[in-house]
View (tube, rainbow, N blue to C red):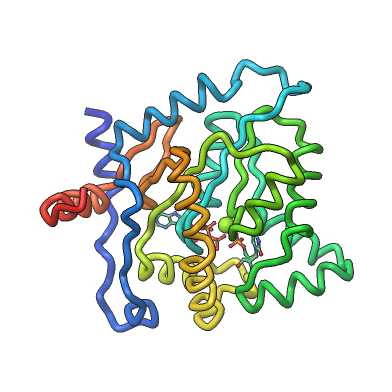
Length: 256
Ligand SMILES: Nc1ncnc2c1ncn2[C@@H]1O[C@H](COP(=O)(O)OP(=O)(O)OP(=O)(O)O)[C@@H](O)[C@H]1O
Ligand SMILES: O=c1ccn([C@@H]2O[C@H](COP(=O)(O)O)[C@@H](O)[C@H]2O)c(=O)[nH]1
Ligand SMILES: [Mg+2]
């Protein structure tokens, strides 16, 4: 009963088909793996609370449990990571936020980073990996979500070489392009890259450079593909009605 009420609360209006800048972009779906249904999502929740060292005591010498969180721009990585971090006790390290902090520090590196972010390109691996490595060390956490990294194969190789480990899992938020554009244009956080020109570039970079990283980890059985329409409430993943309808349609079309 409570689930049904929550489902109703999560009901959102269907996407508008108006001729926004978003609608000119193709709606693409990635078919690397089937998107997981709600019960399967809760297996991930169990993984977080069992295998992921939840009984650790913080100050430890063991390698932390690492989850890379990937997805296109605006797919909801930051939003979901905030919830996962508070529900499951993960440290949340956003690569984009670390880069923005570096810009805010006024360093010389920050100027280079700002220029790259404005163009929707990828910051050199040594810079990003070093920021992540330091943040991991400072957090001293035994469970870490690394949000929005690695962006490309070169990032991935640099992380594995410098930090000396692979992620335990990769969470991939699958989101249609028109939804991502709509979310980014409505985000309203004053980000220099939330404008349609940069968004188009970020989407191209995502398709050409980030998807190969997801493919690589898929081939190693590490990817948990999730719908970007899910929400996490008190440790339980719930799908909203719009996503369930989307799944039904996909099943009818033989996608799942
Ligand atoms: N499930 C959702 N339904 C609707 N809007 C959402 C959902 N998840 C996140 N949003 C909104 O979409 C916008 C983008 O979300 P978020 O910042 O989490 O994305 P992101 O993947 O971290 O993006 P970026 O790669 O640009 O950092 C935010 O305004 C957020 O509130
Ligand atoms: O590993 C990374 C992460 C981010 N960038 C650059 O920052 C922006 C914004 O990142 P978000 O994750 O969307 O906050 C991204 O478009 C890249 O330009 C990066 O180079 N490497
Ligand atoms: Mg983000």
